[in-house]
Length: 111
Image (cartoon, rainbow, N blue to C red):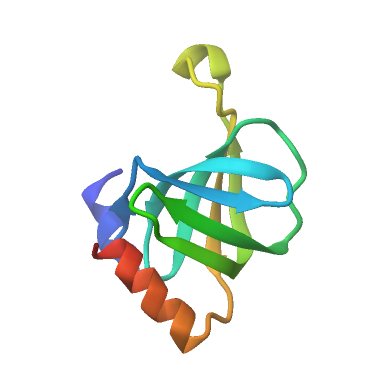
């Protein structure tokens, strides 16, 4: 990511390696999280609806439940090139979080 792209972002992204999302389509590996959204890698190509709810779980025991999200972008990766079991990267924004959800999100980001 270039510095100019990072400067244009409204919220700073925080990278995670020990966190997953859970949704009706399965479990996905989190790439990064900000106060405005999250990006993750999905294991298989599937159609994600425009809006849905996800749980976010990490290895410290934090479990954020039913966070409403809206898909902003999706990118199919070349599995052979990256040697990963995850083939689709998705970026979503949080959509209408409650004050309690924002508090839990900040607890995860700044743990």
